[in-house]
Image (cartoon, rainbow, N blue to C red; front, side):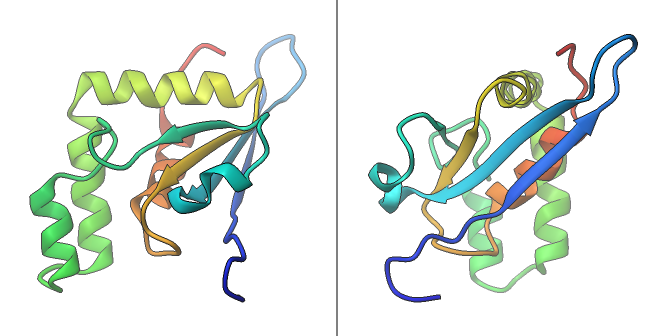
Length: 130
């Protein structure tokens, strides 16, 4: 990747609901420093602190200092998010938005690993009535 080039992952999820067409959930991710470079039509959601979807300071510190593996980091992040009812509601809201619009999760990490990629998977797991 060259300098200034955006790293992008697209998660497309197809849900089959009774008597309806499959629904495509469009989630993308982005680097917060490139906020203005993404299409205006994208709904940009900051998932960095102070977001309810950001990792705790302790969890992030443990990862950055090499005290835990990425697998352990993801496991603890999932536990942190799924044990917080407000965070689960937020994931559900994002999933609903992504059923109608392109939603971009924004964070300070320029490229993987970053918790926004884990959040994208978690949004797929959360139950919601679309």
